[in-house]
Amino acid sequence: MDERSSVIVVDDHALFRMGVLQALSAHKRFAVVGEGGSKEDALRLVENFLPNVALLDISMPGNGIDAAREISARWPTTKIVMLTVSEEDDDVLEALDAGAAGYVLKGAPALDLITAISTVAEGRAYLSPALGMRLFGVIRNRTEGHRVERLVDKLTPKEAIVFRLLGRGCTNRTIAEEMSVQIKTVKFHVGRLLIKLGAKNRVEAALLAQRHLKLSANSKT
Image (cartoon, helix red, strand yellow):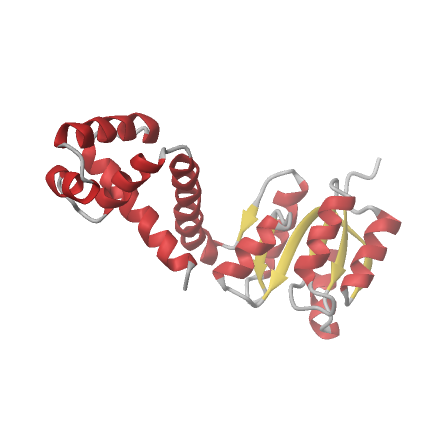
């Protein structure tokens, strides 16, 4: 039985695509079943061959990320590896959001490409080593930001005001003056905040509030 992983290669640069095909043909584990140079080609090849892995360029005609998104939605058994020159965080994150399980830079050694396809074919994810640590930090910050946003949505209007004022470094007395309430009322709201946010203490809640304020400011710029 043929246990090789079937692969399609879609890149609008013919010479580069030829090099990739040669690299893959040297490994008996892969069987290249089709090649193309556009989103339209990618969709047609996946529909016709239902390959294990689709190797796509981001900047090809029709947009590789759009191709990845449609392939992921229509043929989820086909795993996607993006092969591109772009190291932009937004491109990587958008590709992963579109369903790509692998992301390899075109300047990477052939062995990295082989490793990426093998890893993705086995159902795991792969990022080029040059991107891994940097993206880990970006993804972690965005994930934390989304978590805080979800928690903030659960706050009452008064708790939300206290939360924002904590992020600005206000004391209980200052918060009480801002809200025209007694200090004990502020302490009550802070206690409720700690429970809802899962924060251990006031300092941790204030740090979460500062991050929330920073993310909110960035989203408006």
